[in-house]
Image (cartoon, rainbow, N blue to C red):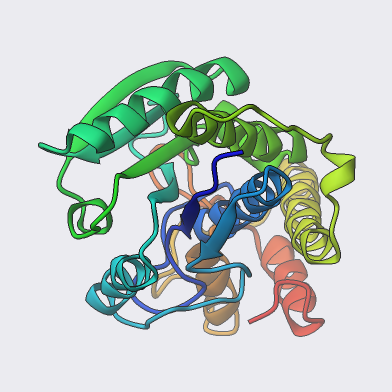
Amino acid sequence: MKMAKIYIDPGHNCSGADTGAVGYGLKEQDVSVQIGVILRELLLVSGQTVKMSRDSITDTVSSSLNGSLAYRYNSANSWNADVFVSIHCNAANTKAYGCETYYCTGSTQGRALAECVQPNMAAETERYNRGVKSANFAVIKHTNMPAILVETAFIDNYDDNRFLASEDGKYKCATAIYKGICDYLGIEYKLESEDELMSREYEELKAENDRQNDIINQMGTEFEELRNTAKSKIYDYVDDNMPDWARPTIQKLVDKGFLKGDEEGKLGLTEDLMRMFIVNDRAGVYRE
């Protein structure tokens, strides 16, 4: 069996200047790690050597953007990786959807790797195929080996978001990238089921993902119930009109992506709804 050193780069960080996109409460920096961990397990089963820039949703490789990017390509270069794969979730205007794979402009081998991964992405995920594209993203421009950046799906598109939030969706993304790498290296697939890959580390990531989904779903239910029954004043924005006692919690929930306005940015909050959020916040439901 052909052996290779695969560097997996789950995009973005838990904190700092490079935290990625958010959609419906789902965080890109979490999804990228969750997919990366599954990909690592698949590659290890196939006898490959793997290193990751991040392997936990709490990881921050650097608090600055330039430092974060430099750490990733420098780490891959110093390790002398054979293949570099950066995993991301796209974001645009809530209407764009699908998957796409980038290689560095002018890189023949990078393009060959991308052309192996992208067809598998479209087939496994059944997302719209946006094709293979070239760009000069830092993490694929400054690597010394064939490198790609995979945009798995659009985190701010509702249908794509639900796919990324699901365990099956993340497994399919990882499987697609795995198959593409195998095709590029010329090795046979050695796939194991999703259940067989449930290591303790992945179980912890899954539990955190489920916790976030539970919060989002419960907030959505309570939000609609209170908004439909309340006849009190509506607060649409975190501004001077919103009571001082509510602003810190509401701003926190907006920043975390748990609260998102409509097309006009209106939150549609009542005082009862805000009080419920504050009680939950003080109970530690939303964490820091």
